[in-house]
Image 1 (tube, rainbow, N blue to C red):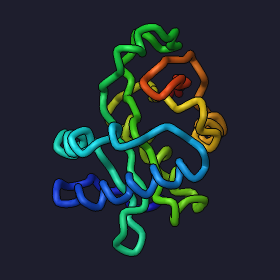
Image 2 (spheres, rainbow, N blue to C red; image 1 turned 45 degrees about the vertical axis):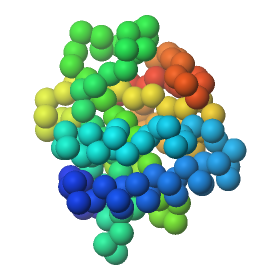
Image 3 (tube, rainbow, N blue to C red; image 1 turned 120 degrees about the horizontal axis):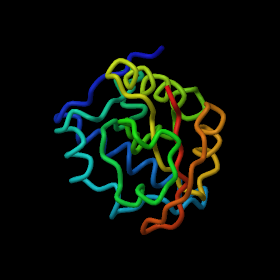
Image 4 (cartoon, helix red, strand yellow; image 1 turned 90 degrees about the vertical axis):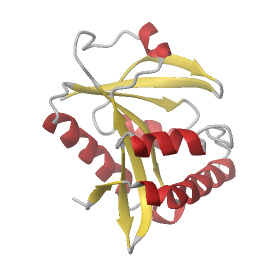
Amino acid sequence: MKNILKINPQDINEVMCLIKEVISEMKNNEIDQWDDVYPNYKVLFDDIHAEAMFGVFEDLELAGIVVLDGNQSAEYSSVEWELDHESPLVMHRLCVRPKFQRRGIAKELLKFSEQFAINNRYTSIRLDAFSGNPSALSLYENNGYRKRGMVTFRKGDFYCYEKAL
């Protein structure tokens, strides 16, 4: 498994560069998921200060990130979760810098997230993925995440996924 580290406040500019590159790549692939409004500097800075953002570095360059916490969007209350009475870990903003994509980094971040959840006594992982992002949907579906419902955010419909651990 790759060395995945907690992102520190001094890494915020590198995180912002990664996000901008990911947004540009999504636009090139006609995926209208993220933009200048979200995820923004404040959201990402708050993730870092909450010690909830983790990253993979390749040759000292930030290759990918994931945010892990217990914060569920209010919209999640409409979803029929399988493990509704449990305390889930919630995964946010998993992304990989375009030049590092298709190297298994997203899968490594998933494995790390699952082990983190187990180590911290969570019984499941929940997340939402943009319905118009086929790469993200297949990543989760091919790694044992089950579709539990759909929620709507500013950019459209997002599938909600859950994996029991």
